[in-house]
Length: 329
Image 1 (tube, rainbow, N blue to C red):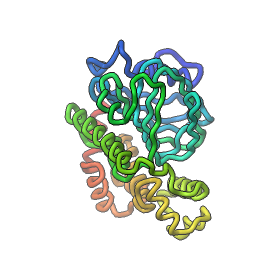
Image 2 (image 1 turned 90 degrees about the horizontal axis):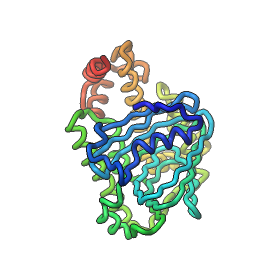
Image 3 (image 1 turned 120 degrees about the horizontal axis):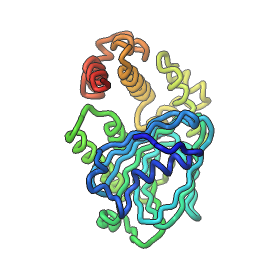
C-alpha cells in the first residue's frame, strides 16, 4: 500500500500509516480491511526499511518493522480510545513517554505490554541503528478477558508491564517473520503463533512478576551490542569469540552469557541466522543464483548451506528463488 499524500515529516508519515491500520470503533476490520496484509516502505529521505501489518481477525493485528534511519526521528500520536499492544523490541528500541511515564531503553531484548486510553505518546528513534520491532495489537473492547487477566480497567488511562524477551518468545518472533506459508494457511499460522506469543508473555508475568527488566550491567549491555554490530559488519569472516571479546573490551564468558540473554541465541547462532537472512534477501533478486548467494554470505559448502536454509525456512533455496521470481511477474 502506498501513501498517496507526500508527508513533510516522518511524524506525518507515521500517522498516515497509523490512521489506515490502527483499530478503532468506526473501522474495526470487519472485512480484514479487504486485505490480510499492508506493506509500507520507508521513504528514502528518512532512511530505509519495511513496515508490515497483518490483519489476523477482528480486533487483532500483527505488525513488524525493520528500520534504519539517517537521522533521529520523532513521532507523536494521541490514542483517544482504548488501545492495547504487546511490543517486542528485538533490536534497538525507541525512547518514549506517556504523560508522567518515560521509557528510555536504547537497546532491544525486552518486551512491553502497554495499555493507553485518551493519552498522547511521544517516541524518539535513533539514527544509524537497525531497529527490529514487532507488535501484537488488540482492541480492548473485544478482549475483555485479557484485560481482566492483566488487572487493567478499561477506564484507566495507562498501564505498562515489561520483562526480557525469553528464547521461546524470540523463536516465535523469528517464525512470524520467516515462514513458507501462503493464503489461508498463512493466516492460520500467524494467528496461532501470535496467540502463543501472548500466552508466553502472560505465563512469564505470572511466574516472575517481579523479575528485573535487565539482568546485565549497563556497561556490559553496551559492549554486547557493539559485538553484535561487529558481527553484522563481518558476517562472511567474523572474528573468533576470543577476538570479539577483546575488540569490545569484555570478558569472554560475559560475552557468551550476555549475548544469549539479550538476543536469545549464541554468537555462532546469531551469525548463522543473519547469514541465512541475508541469503534469503539475495535470492529475492532474480539476477543472482543460489550458489552465488551461498558464497556471498560466507558458505563455501553449498550442500551445507542448502541444508541449513531448508531447516530454517522449510524449503530449499532453489525452490524459494523460483517461487519468489514467479510471484514477482
